[in-house]
Image (spheres, rainbow, N blue to C red):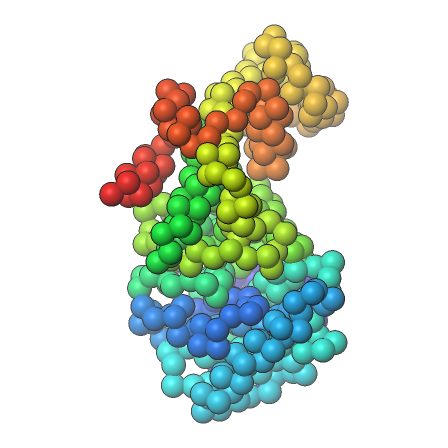
Length: 421
C-alpha cells in the first residue's frame, strides 16, 4: 500500500466506517479482486447468474443481504433473503465466522462470499437509510481488508444482484490509481417482455440523452451514475467519506464528490453490463420506480423529455462562466442574456464568485473553481431551471428535433440504431 495514503485510509476506517469493518477479525485469506453487492429480495441462486460469464479466480464477493425496518414488505423480503442465506450455507464447503453478523463462505465457486447479515431482526437497515448504507458497509469492509493486505488491487467493484457481468468485467480496472477516482462502465437493460422493453427504452433514452447533453456543454461530470456499473479508487473513496447512506441517489452523490478529487472516467467502449429490466418499489427513485411511472401513464406519448434548448442554454452558461476570467482578473459581470441572468440570480452567483475571488489569481484556479462549484448537482439544478422555460417534448417530437440531433453524441445514436434494428 502507498504510504502517503495509509494515514487517510486508517483515519477513515477509525472515524467514519461502519461498525462491521471494525468488528471483523481472523480473516485468513487473500484475494486479487473485490466486488460489493447489496442484496434484497433476490433469487437464492442470483450469484450464479451474476457471475455466469466470469472466469477469474481469487475474487471476494462482499454480499450485504439487507431489508429495511418498518417497510410494508419487510417481512416478505426478510423471508426471501433468508432463502438466499440458506442456499449459500447449504452449498458451502467451509464457513468462517468473522463477527456477529459477518461470515466468510467458501464453496466450489470461483469466488468466496463474505456474507453480511443486515436482514435479521435488530440488524435491518434503519428506515431513514437505504441501499446507500448497504453499499457503504460493503465498501468499508473492502477498504479494511485492502489496508490489511488481504485485497491486492486498489479498486472496489460495485454492482447489483440483477445483472450479468461481461466476461472481461474485471479487466476494466487499471494499475495506475493516479489518474482517476472512479471508472463507470457501460450497460444495457435486457428483458424478454416486449412491453417492458418499450418502457425501458423510453427511460434509457432519458438518461443517455441527459448524459449526452452534459457532454455537449463540456462539463467534466460526463458519466452515467448507476450503482451497478462503478469501479471506485480505494485511495479516493475515504477522501469523500464514502457512500451516502440514503435510500437512492447514493451513486450520484458519491461520483459528484469523487469527480472533484480526480476525473471520473466513463468507459463507454467497455463490454456492457446486462441489467434486468424490472419494475420495483424498493427505492423512492431510480430505474424501477421510473418504469412504474411510465407504465401508469395513459399513453407512452405522455412521457416527456427535457427540451434540447435546455442543453443549448446550459452550454451558453458554461461559456459565460469561462468568459469571466479576463486579462488576468476575474470580472464578475452579470450575463446580458435574460435567461442566463435569471440563472445567475437563482444560483446566488455574485456572492459565491465575490467570495471566491479572494483566492483566485489565475485562469487555472478559476477553471478549478468552476469545476468544483458548478458540479453535477448544480448542473442538474440549472437544467431544472431551464426546463421551466421550455416545453418538454415526447419521444416522437424529441427525435424529430434538429436541436436534439445537435446535442446528442455517437453513443445516443448507436443506442437508437440498436433499438430500431
